[in-house]
Length: 359
Image (tube, rainbow, N blue to C red; front, side, top):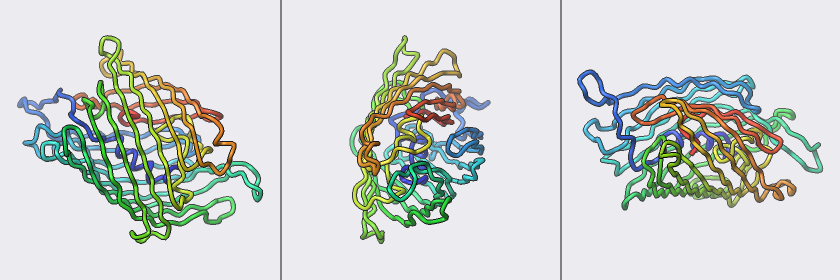
């Protein structure tokens, strides 16, 4: 599991309200002809995952202007997420992405708690080579602030506190227990044209998480994420060809929860978390076909390369995946979509409920 389940949720927050240059210019008006300041979207969550099995929950979201008089900033978003699964995974989260001061400032606030039941693939001289069930209990608090410093360049700082307890359920023994506190630095150069459905432009992202001992951590580590997204309109500007290159590296005292993994946001089709290490490179491309006003479809292909795995054989191969899905437009004024994807990877496959686009 990548950065334990808590950083998966952190990435989900970023996906829901990614920093952006501008929002869609279309607007919904009330009976008086004025733009509505508040939109409520009660999104149901229904999914199936080979790891957590059948998932169900609710994700109510509010979209609004932080300052009703500020028409330059994109709309802010606040909400919650509550999910339960048939393998007894349970978690809850509240979050906000705020845009204010004519889009000079952007803030992230999130807090969550829960437990995640999954499996880890172990191969050593002490245990038979196979998947072993494990549980991670977690708590997290995330606070971040970005400021536009030049043109479309945003720099920011944040605070992240994560508590995790992971243990192998088959042996009822702890794998690791950590309370990590750190800061992170972000730098985004954002040239996209829409926050929820980019039609053109690009996005360059860098995130540096620092969990050093002088923050009170028992072990010191650094996590670096870099990515570049590209968007291009095709088929008479009705569809979008989107591509993403990303990489992640973990340095220092790398715990079980901090290992990188083939899967998650970066490559669909690997929900079991079999391939894990300390560095990873990902490439994915997606065609977004919009034949109808509210209904669309996606087809995608991706590949990952893992480094620093404890199982040397896992470092030798590239991990490909292909898949397809559909999208439904739930908020026209912000081009926000929900949908479902199916992906097939190397000896694995997955179903993914999507809120917004994958990248």
